[in-house]
Length: 122
Image (cartoon, rainbow, N blue to C red; front, side, top):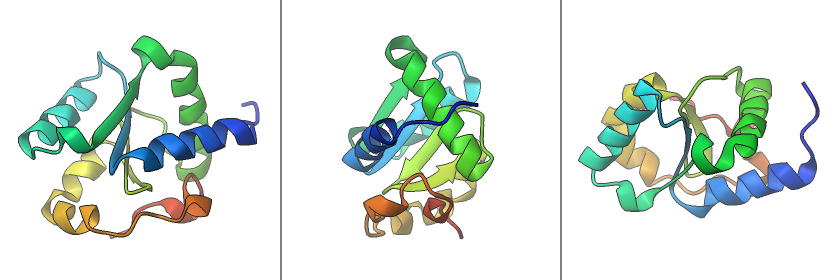
C-alpha cells in the first residue's frame, strides 16, 4: 500500500469537515443504500456529503487506504460525523440511539481527523 500524500489527506479533511455528516459510498452496496435510507428517514440529507465510485473512484481508493491504516476499516460505507470516524453501516446503526448527541458534539479538531484519535468511541 503506497503512502498517501499530505495534500490528499488535507483534501479529505476538508471534505470530512465540510458538512456534519460525510460518507464514502459505493452505489451498488446494499449497506450504503441502507445508510442513505436511514439518513433520509432522519431528515439529515441536507447535512450529508458523499463521494462515490461514480465520479470519485481514485479518491475513494485513497480514502479506503487511509481508513484501513488508521481504523482497520476497509468496507463501505465509511461514515464520519463532525469529523469523527463512526465506521460502517453497522456501527452507524449501533449509535442511532445517540445520534442527536453525536450530531451536537463539537466538530473534531482538524489535526485529529483521519488519525487513530479521530475515531468515535461510545
